[in-house]
Structures are given as structure tokens and as C-alpha cells.
Length: 108
Image (cartoon, rainbow, N blue to C red):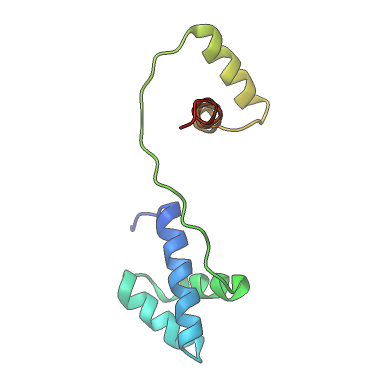
């Protein structure tokens, strides 16, 4: 069984399909190129082309993530987990947003 594509791979394949749809008159031609380039099945290539056709323009490719391990005081961990459980985002998202605010405040 093949592994699922990452979010970044997914966006890049959709963007490639957008370009191919502009280049070829027939969606079948774009499907064939995607299959060859990415080694994917016909149904999967069709889904990328269909999604690209709906969008009509390329998507922004998300930035890759890197795992970082930090030690935090228990009180902060509890508050972050409480935020996560209330539907305010993932732990990674909450921490990343907080760090973005901190870095911006310090001119970085």
C-alpha cells in the first residue's frame, strides 16, 4: 500500500495540474503527465486535475515544519492543553502563533 502524500506534496501536485490544464486542451493529457511524473494512479491524478480545474490558480505552498522539543512549566502546558481541548487549535499551532507574536515584538 502506498503512503499518503504530505500536505506540501498535495499542494505541489495541484499546482502542477493547474499548469498542465493551461498547457493542454484535454484534461486526459494532464492526467497522463501527472501519472508519469508522480507515479500515481489514474483516479488520483484525476482528483488532482479536478481540484485544479475548480481552483483555476495555484495554491500557496505551505512552509515545511520542523520538530523542536522544549521544556515548559506545567502551568503553561496545562493552559495550552486547555486551549487545544476547547477547539482553539493544535498544541503546535498555539505555540507557533505565540512565538510569531513574540518574535514580531522583538523585530524578528
